[in-house]
Amino acid sequence: MQGAEAPELAEGTRLLDRYVIIDRIAGGGMASIYRATDERLQRVVCVKLLRLVLEAGSTSGSTVYQATYSHFLQEALALSRLHHPNTLKIFDFGYLEDSGRPFQISEFLDAGNLEQHVRREGPVLPNAILSILEPIGGAMQEAHEASIIHRDIKPSNILFARINQTLVPKLADFGIAHATPVKKKKTEDRDAYDDAEDPVSVVTLFSPRWAAPEQLAGAASGPATDVYSFALVTVFMLAGRAMFETKDVRATFPERVIGDRLVTRRLSELGIAPPLQPPLLRALAARIVERTATVVQFVNEMKEALNTMGAFPERGHRKRMPSEGTDTLSTPLATRQYGNAQVVSADARPEEASQVPTHEIPMASGARASVVEVDDRLDLAVPSELGVDARVRLTFVPSRDGYRVNVKGLNCFIVRDGRPAAAALLERDGAVELMSSAREPMGRLRFTFGAVSGQNRVFPAFGPELLLPLQRAQRAVAIHIESTGELIVMCSQA
Image (cartoon, rainbow, N blue to C red):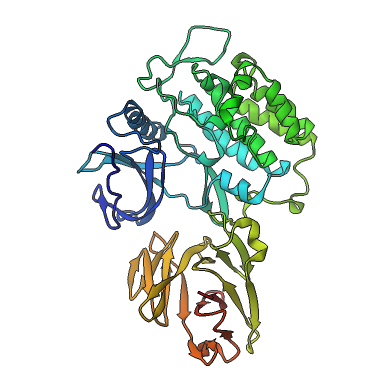
């Protein structure tokens, strides 16, 4: 099937007689990503399916596709050999019966990636850097000890898992990892490797902004290649932007390959603190022989430099990073906090968080109804006794009689009339239960659509005080969170 993409996996598709597709959550590059249920172990998993048509338009008959196919298999083999807690876990592997396309089954991480967090929240203060460097450095070191070179270390490949309100970083996407490097004879470039036995090394696969000089020059990769990229990621965290973030990133290639002047200049231009520049410069040396040899050495040198700055005290007076216990959502959405529930307006850009139209209505009972104005949808994080928020997405959907509300579980099932599903469509007052992938209760939401009275929409179930002008609430639904007693009204003018 050349020249056209194969149909996507439909909801309900079964793989290996145990994994059931819920929905497609991402796509691009060489694979499509799906959320699925593991029926045997009652958990949500991630399905990564190789595409027949790559992002650049290459098809299954091309050299690039064959290389990508081989790298896809290599990634599964590499992940199967790694057991570090901060490395993405792979559970299974198989092929589609109709097309033979390979797919991987791995743990489902729904808390975003490092690039999203930094783009949304800005630079990471020095006293938070180690919460990313140490765990990811440990994952990289295990891979290197197993003779696996990642070759694509970048912020978007550092994902977050949410565990008991804490976001834990995990190293992912070993798609172009070199799993069987062969050591060269002794040369001046220590830790250099021979790629001659890699049958697909002729295809250039790397991310230009994060690549090491040897990758740009088409030379062999080794552990120091990953150290270089990891140092670039560290600069990105400190500065809030990439060192080589230009419209024509390829124009930086010659200077990056021949020496260190560009790197030295960019560190100063980006405002990197002077005590942190020496370890970064050593890790970003163009010549491998002059570069920091191991990721452990780099992390230790960064830790020493941070200590000289007094970076670790005053933890209560700085912005937290995701891995330090702040339950940050996975998508860059504008966020407001109401009591214990977190509301996210998916219609606003992150920089407009303070402009999301919201207000509160005091009730006779002493409670307050939080009103959130949206265009179409709203994300809601509901506290649960499991220690992990249940995340749902509410979307207004047109209907013959006006509108309905689609309730979709982002990390949980929606249970209505005793039947768990990925989503439920509501058109009248009612309630839904929230259930984890392990079939544990995570909360209950009660929905009330209210009624039109004159020029207002009223919600009698919550008392006469809860009344909204129709001009602002042509579509509206009140959501009562039973576990916290909070009331949130989602409304729209359209």
